[in-house]
Length: 143
Length: 143
Image 1 (tube, rainbow over the protein chains, first blue to last red):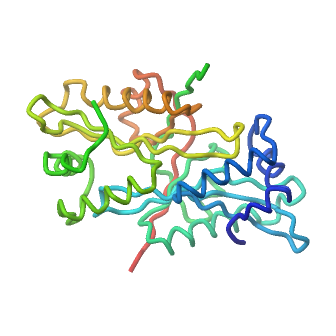
Image 2 (cartoon, rainbow over the protein chains, first blue to last red; image 1 turned 90 degrees about the vertical axis):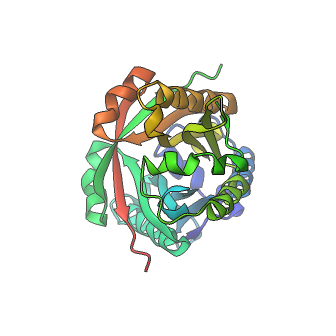
């Protein structure tokens, strides 16, 4: 378990994420540009679970938010937990989330939050999360 | 409605946020340092509703997340919507959230998400949000 490096983008990260969500038509070259932007922002830590052959089994991102409240506290947001189809059911997702929590703790976050589908509540409760608020969404038409 | 400037921190922003959450013992000098960190991260846009006398009636933050999924899409997170006690019930909160959505649209976000207390679901639905996922939380003991 370590932070993503640009070279990993050739090693299955995009197909792992494709198991989570629509990837659009993102090429590896475009993904490298996206990763450059993510690193420039400094607030996102992309974690990867690496298999012995160097392939990526799963990924998640810890987004760290600097707040004014809580004495200028930091909040970690766990986003985009994705595991490749070949690695499902082996504890990779749980290990990724725990690594995200550990990173948040290391950085001094006072809490970690995430939004999940109702069927994943039990998975996150076993890790130590509790149901907290209602996740709301609005889609924007960017034409 | 405009983005926060460092000078606003003397004009009621901290007491407005104190109406939302515990502020710890954050001083104005410390808040200026926090704001410096927020601006350095480049991904947070702190919006303020300014009254004609220059006082701050309310604030919210749009956190912009660069993702790999959705073709390297951007997601806006609305955080810390706070209105001062003297300005409640006048549409300031709704105007702040709409300003956050407008900023997210301007920046090219494909969606805006937020977590709210159950009693605020109706408020956000009237703005155009829909219930989406379950918000989960874990508290970290940073001793």
